[in-house]
Image 1 (cartoon, rainbow, N blue to C red):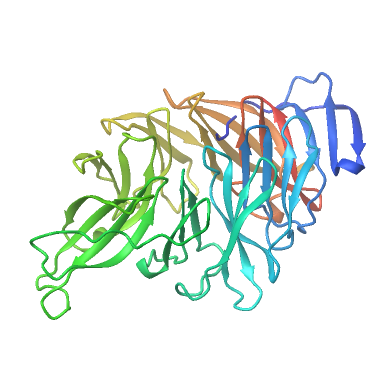
Image 2 (spheres, rainbow, N blue to C red; image 1 turned 90 degrees about the vertical axis):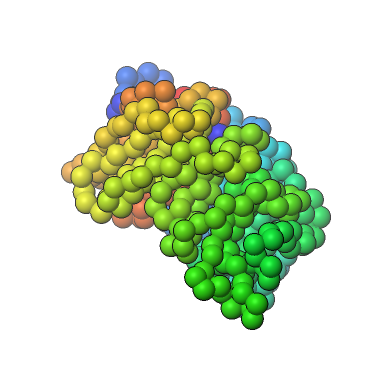
Length: 422
């Protein structure tokens, strides 16, 4: 699930019980007409003010993946913040450096750690968030260019883990593994194309939950690219590697930048040269958004709506737009204050969570949380919470379930995980 918002409300802490043995603080709020009600607050994870890499909420457990300074991945009881389990970094590594954006439907997530020897972000660990069990761990050193922080992406599917070690989506840095065993999976199936007798050379690659998209160029008889060159996007099934369909591209400038895929049968959203393009399961183009200026960046697909953010370097209001996934029709457009960040989407309730940072003299940094209605783009504030920006920019450390929203971020000298009633 994802996240949301309504309007500022100073809250009053009427009582607080410190449960030191459980490494958390349960906050009881009585009354107060402003702000979201804080239900509990976890003790600092010892990460020295650095923001968390990921926050996952699944089946009554909130999993916190801290940065380098916090070597453990920690699971909390979603109801009261009790520490349920702690999973240390694999032997010979130090600190997480990347994580999957979310778990799969079974609550399995992936965390990458710094390798102690190569000092790259290369050791992947697959964790069952119900109890913190490590299903398997593997060092990916030597499988591609040595990656650094903020360049590795991992996606956990139903039966497959895909990892991209390259910030440039280099095909050589893309790996697939069996989720249960950790065994490497065979290469993607070759593309049979009578018009490309000598095969395709992959140029870039990206992955969604159940789909892999590769931009490739057709080789000539000598192994060099054809003249004039020919390019195509090839779509494969993530789990089996089966080639599903291909589509010719005009040139390499249409290289894929991102891929988003929802439920089986839903359109595949591909970012091609700043354009958002939707394809059917058989590769037919449903629609293509011609964007102006710096274009649009997709943020999520939820409740049949593609949520996109206009890219702009100015400090003007942040603009989010909603498009019908099946038609590409723009349903709404909303303007929000500068320094507003997208924190996630809740498909079940048809809302997204936005966080707007502002500084108020005497009170410091504040984060106003807003629910964005995906049906019409209207926003309703849920309240303002302390969030000192000097400890880092707003990160994706937010999650929700049916009862609460969870926010990881700077508070006092440390990063704290806080739970708020919805």
